[in-house]
Image (cartoon, rainbow over the protein chains, first blue to last red):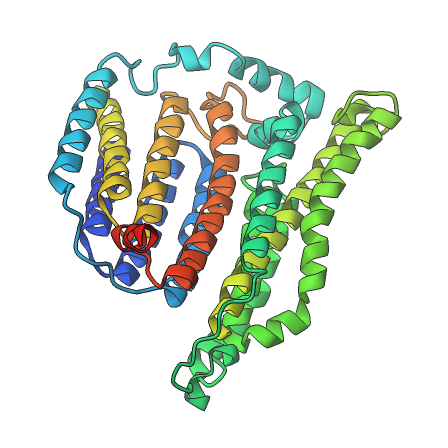
Length: 329
Length: 118
């Protein structure tokens, strides 16, 4: 049964991807990309990757769609006719597909426990997690503790991308004399004049925030963690901004505070690492944080996950505001 | 089971190349970025597929349940962070596209090249 479901999902994904490439209407393409992400998330779930599925659903289907729509509002909704070298591109793509498919015949059988990928460090992580870190979710243990360096690097990438977007939009755009907008459709107003989205949205926001906090602090025990929680909290704030208007959202969470969040989360992560050094361990070694090494690991993971969550929330909300504010000028 | 495994890898190849086609053949910059995210998702799918173990479950220990077979947690960690980094770089790319639109008045590749040549 699961086999059939998997095949069904994969086939749907290919159909969606083809439709995305084929359509000339960019709005349709973006919405289809959201559906594609949702299918991908379901597929990840079938492949035992619960954490990844949660991340893909929150980010790929949620935040990514909002950002693309924000960019569409500032550019164009339709694409022009395809370029002249279409046949050449098709040829290259067809040949490469065949080569990659030929290469798949050499791959280990699907789900083979003896495959090389399961032989190196993975069993070690699975064995050591209960005794050294003692949290149930091995993905979180590897992410936050064993490979804490890598995650710190990823947080800095997110931080840098956020700073990059804020810089790009820091320059004032040239003003163009456009037709005056109708007062009822002032973009800064959000959906304030639409009753049903407003009522439903207002009901949803507290629960989304609560779920975000649950995902944040339950990440050690179930699927979740800072990355997913950051995206979910950001989604709640973006929903608030869409409903109540940009200005109101910026009154609640001013840009200055968001800038503080962006830097603060990464700083908190780094500070936990340095604290480990000051207490006589190595960088990002949480075992020395308290007398009991396992408790130290728990505290360290909790703190750095909060740091990750804060930075991701700050970056995603700031990027959204940067796009939305651009539209108004 | 054998066929499903190969099917996963074939879908990976097809999705990868659909994304790649959008990147090289579509002149619209936003379409290129969507293509790039499909390309990226295909790579994610490959990694997660390789981490799956027969009869396995998500790598989360459950109290009182012994002898569990877990799928490989490592590719999952890698891809989890890659998704977040992916959205950050996509946001940066979209920012650049919007700035290009403001400077050139177009997001079609050949029109931008035309303006550059003048």
